[in-house]
Structure formats: structure tokens, C-alpha cells
Amino acid sequence: MQKDGLTSLVNSLILRDFKLPIDLEDRNTLLFDILNAAFEQRRDNRQLLLPNFDKTNTVAILSDYGGEAPKSKYLTYTFTFADYDYLGGIYKDEILKIRNTYGLNKPYKEISFKNLRYGQVQRALKEYLHMMNWGGNSFQ
Image 1 (spheres, helix red, strand yellow):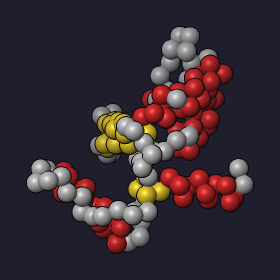
Image 2 (cartoon, rainbow, N blue to C red; image 1 turned 180 degrees about the vertical axis):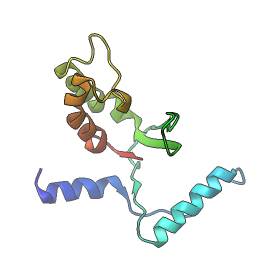
Image 3 (tube, rainbow, N blue to C red; image 1 turned 180 degrees about the horizontal axis):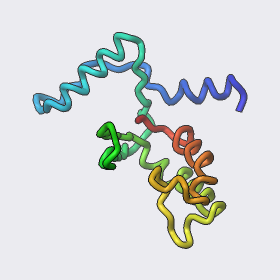
């Protein structure tokens, strides 16, 4: 993809007009208040980019927890917001192609950082991460 095409794609995925703080009609929890404060600080430092879900029917919210390993220094929580229609369409097809190419479907093998020494996962990782990062409208 040429630079102008990539710039256009990235700009189409970024929400340009938004109002902070986000208010849930008097139902804000402490966690929500913390997230609002973090968003406002990043906005004020010109570091906040939010996804544009204007043309999205449904937003999937996925979460993951890490850090339970005995030698882990940190506990982490990750939340990913993604266009659900995309997950079931192009994304699903592309991930299936990657999984088939590297033999990760028979038997089914989960792609996780815990299994990076597993040859097929290691070989598929570059394409898989590329698809995860640029394949659709998501925010993490």
C-alpha cells in the first residue's frame, strides 16, 4: 500500500470529533471515572486516538488478563474494542487462511504468547499480528 493510501486508511479509522468526559447518565462507576480521567489526560497531551465506529453495527469488547506466571513482574488487563461485523467477515476469512497455511487447525492450536516456541505458531506470528493490528477497525 502506498503512503497516501495508508494515510487515508488510518485517517478513516480515527474518530475526529468526540466529547470528554463520557457520561453514562449518572451510572458512572469508579473504573469508568478512572478511564475518563486517563482519556482526558491523553487528549490534553495530544496522545489520544480513538477508533471511528460510526459505520459499525455492533462493537465487540474483548478482554484478557496476564501476569499470573510466578516470575511475572506485572498484572495486566487488556481490553480490545472491535467492529464485530468485521470479525465475522474478512477478519475470520483471513485468520482462517493463516491458520490453514501454518497447520494450526488440525489439530486446533491456540495462538498465544505462552506457545511461541511451538514451530507453527512461531512461523504464523508475523502474519497473524499484522492481521490483528491492521486488518480491521479496532482499538486496544
